[in-house]
Length: 607
Image 1 (tube, rainbow, N blue to C red):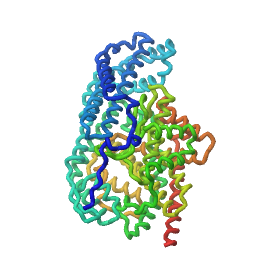
Image 2: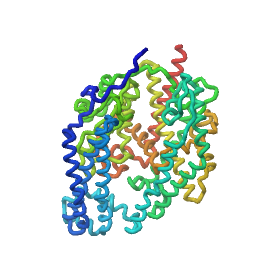
Image 3: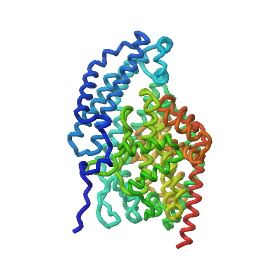
Image 4: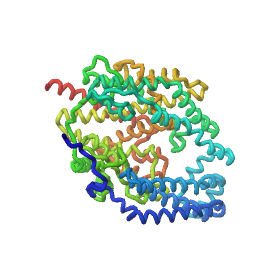
């Protein structure tokens, strides 16, 4: 019998393919020392409470004290979570992570008085402190952000009531999560080998990529049979969650739940509206791509369960990790020597944990704190997707490196609105490089298909979600009941509008709203689409060597949170309050779609 290949144990992985966490703490003894020191310091956190109003120096001391507490806690947490993720079966690391998570919560609680105390001071008092103490100038934007909340902060007693109801407001999301991940039981279906498999969320994703259409259809119908059965419960759960968003926005004096959510990062609402408007104008491009999918799959009728199966099943290109390192460095050359020096440092100084081992956390990410390296977790397999994952996570890590080496701790991080731009800019630059260097029509078609599928899933699909999310909030605000019939009717029509007349009207897809966890995130998904659009525009500017494009991009990478996200992106050369950056991204999609259609014709003629 053939021996089953086993994943290596953690201790069997070559050291050079693991991250070097000794740069954070030499060993667990040093971790323990820092942990105990911060724990003791938190016991005395109240000594600074109530002192901010005394003088400019006291105000400065309070700011620096709170930031220093957070800075220490973050390093302890990052070390523990990275240790745990490299082998989640290690009980020692489980313990470290549990204790560090608890310490983060204790830290937040110990200094929770800070922002309310700042807001208790008048603007006149605060800015008089800045006039009196020059060292406060560094913190001007930080304090401006806090004071900007003043109009929406309630009296202390009411704030306490809202805070105390936090678990209640979050209960709908919790109920959905438990129901979706634990209580819903899906049928047994057959995979493409004819084997019976228990349908789960993960298995469903795999079966939707199957080349066997009967497998895809059975899984699709089986999944939605379950969601349709619970459509009324799930509609009530989502409706209750939306009501919570609308209620909190109203009592805080915002015009809408969307205005309240976007205010956290000072994002103008027209950014959201412009995204939906422009994407709707370019839906004919998606319809063309859907029509090409139908043609390539050789189907008389295209269904929603045909949207994820590969158009080119046999991958004509793959990379080992060593090949991928070399390819990444070549691909990212348009970003200049300063950027590449950080990429090479990441490879040489063991920022990256490369291979899959027993117990290792799945997936990939970039993580770190202000005082650590921006580490990268991978689970490498020799596929094109893994090369894209490598440059994606490298984009996050270089962004973090530049931010932390050019900003003080107070501005040493960046918002979610900005985060995905750096990573997906790298992906777009990689696509351009591959298309410059690969001449084989089949390989080019595979690369372009990879790009177009990513665009479809990130810009078109997430904008569809954003449009639905805004609909349910505005309907509830008008007093319209969010029944399952009302939600399903709108979602079905919305899906038909996005995918066009080439897709058959699958009754099941109208219930897709009932299984999307992002609808409980509160105006979150639009950032995927705006970020990917901005990345397309930035990558094109950089690859085409437009004047100042690279310098402006590096300015963005080095800005952290020193300014509001919209202003940071203006420095990068993209005004996200306008439509042109999304239109530019659509232009790239159209050019790549043109080429894929031509390549398909060539490949057919050469058969």
